[in-house]
Image (cartoon, rainbow, N blue to C red; front, side, top):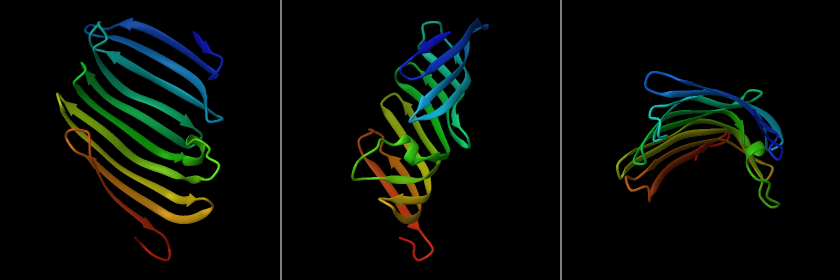
Length: 166
């Protein structure tokens, strides 16, 4: 068991050897941005030199909010990662700024694929009930696609509310 006082984090884990991989399970209770969260999942390490990983359902959750990570890391040049957001309250995860306040519920998917030097980052996100500095804007849709070099990102966004759509 590992306890990290600063983050109020306790991790309980077990390690076992499978035929071609090492597996470890863990349960972690952490406090993130003032909210108690729980992480439960199993990670599979395909090679014993910790070069290749299969990540299955690592979930950070609090009440009805959830962030879920899945994917594979094969060496340093091949990745296929997916991050799913469900009802994540932005005011609880974003840093507090004195002149800028954002609230709303984040839902959607962010993905990163890499094969050698070619990247394929994409995101499809929706912020329900977006509020910026106490001004209710409506629902924001974001579709993001990165170029193959991971240098440029193309963003298609819209805000829908009862009075208009932009």
